Amino acid sequence: MQSISIVFTAYVIVSSLGVRTSCAQTLLPFESSQPFYEWLGSLPQSQDAKHPGYAFLQSARAILEIPADGRQRFLMPRSKSNAKRISVLLDQAFAVSEERSKFQQFAQQTQREIERLAEERESRREWSEAYRLRWLAAGFAELTPSSKAVWSPAEDVLQPKRAPTGTKGPHPITQWPASSYQFVLSPNFEIAFQTKQSDTSDIVEICEQTYAIWKQLFYSYWSSASTVGPDYRSTPAGPFQVIIFRNKENYLKALQSQVRNVAVSTGYYHQNAKACFFYLEDRRSYATMVHELTHQFFIESSSLPIQFDADQTAGFWAAEGIALYMESLSLRDMGASVLIDIGGWDSSRLQAGRFRFLRDQMWFPWDAFGSANGVRFRSMEDIAPRYSQACGLAHYWMENSPTSRTQIANHLDSIYRRGSPVVFEPNDDELIMKSYLDHLRRGPRSGSSYLPFANRNELVLSRCDVDSSWLIDSLASKRNWDSIDVSFTKVDDDAWVKQGVDWDIVRLNVESTKVTDRSIASFAKMPRVQELDLSNCKITDQGVASLQNHKTLKTLWLAGTSITDQSIAVLATLPRLEAIHLQGTAVSSDGWQQLLKAIPRLRSKSTGPK
Image (tube, rainbow, N blue to C red; front, top):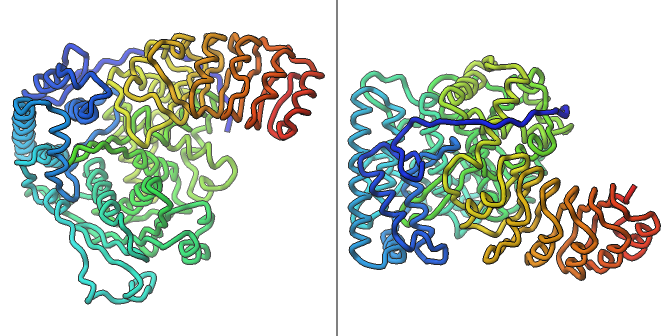
């Protein structure tokens, strides 16, 4: 690993796909897209974040957009069609029946147009495009209670089934007695639960949705080379085995003798057993499920023999990178269907990669990184930043252009089917880093409206071309965040002191921005703020005074600011302060010792003024 010095340059990106609207969005190329999109945006309730139907309308508009940052967007039918739920959402979104009827007419017209285009693609033997369109049409069909998906793969997902209890024997892999586990069958999975769980339908849905999306993204990998017609329902290896343990103890007992470092995991795909093993802590464990299922699909769904060795195959970064990319799967409820995003500049897993490359300017040289086998890649030395770079590069190659997407698909094909990587072009550090940098920086300014997801609560915007106006306008529909990093940007006090803009951020980094004392009072009012980085900002003792007796602040960076010993008395009043950094300030050695005497626990994690 090495630190790098990067010249951050501006960029211009031009998109020629789809239909341009007055708001510069790129829409699905159907006749109904533009009037549908503009009508939804003209409704007063679509502009009021407090309206109960706002989230549904925001999602409905997003369905019609082709995201400009390269993320993959899907509209998928739920595994259990729920006409009552969609009726409730429609009632919330549309105040009058005429509006609801108009929405349904638009949705049904779009569905028909998608189906016609799918038939056209099939007539030209463009099976991959047709397959994705068929799924999109099935998603639109579920937007209205009176309509229904009429395509066999979608119908399969809409009708999950359970195994008859009386015919169940000991589990073939774990040897659990028949009475000790629950067995659920779905069209593509056999899922064993060590105990009865109330969320079995959610888990089945995650499994089926992940598989359907993976098949859309990597159609040529799993499909047969048929010249007669598409094999949309093909599952070469039969049902996928998924095993859910009762708790962590049982999970470790089963795997710790076979899998290195399993203690730090909540899930694992075992290539020899051809099964995914999990224990579920909470809904956050679903991301791990998506990750391990991705490994399983590449091993067990290929239409050709697999030569992949998780220890010895070179180019291993892509296997983990693409699983981390898939792990970014994010959902928004549409009733009987669900809007799903994969990837994007706000992807939860990508933020660590953005931080290390944009903020810390860290990079593993490509000649070693790109060719490392599984053993070297998973070594504990620098494992976290190595995984972050793999995640970031997977996002880059999946999102930057159709050409780059083909490159990583070919690479994955080569390591799984031939056991050796293809050569990426460019393969020069400087060229890769420049393209990667451009991709990371342009995402937030891609022109698409921001669509908040429940599992995306961190943003790293360090060194990006963002300012206070962008921050306020683009994130208008979401003010509560676990973390926001706008260090080294044009953000100033206007982002934090504007009346009516109430931020709730747990960890905030404004290092080397134009923030001054004016913002400190606003930071102090954030109800959950625990970490605050004000390094190299124009902060004085007057600003720090606003933090007196702050109840939640645990970590504070004031390095490079103008504070003096006058702030020591204020800092000593912070009851939960655990770490503080004062290097480069005018605080004296005596003042520093005074603070350590007041809060002795600061000694282990803090840095003094010199």
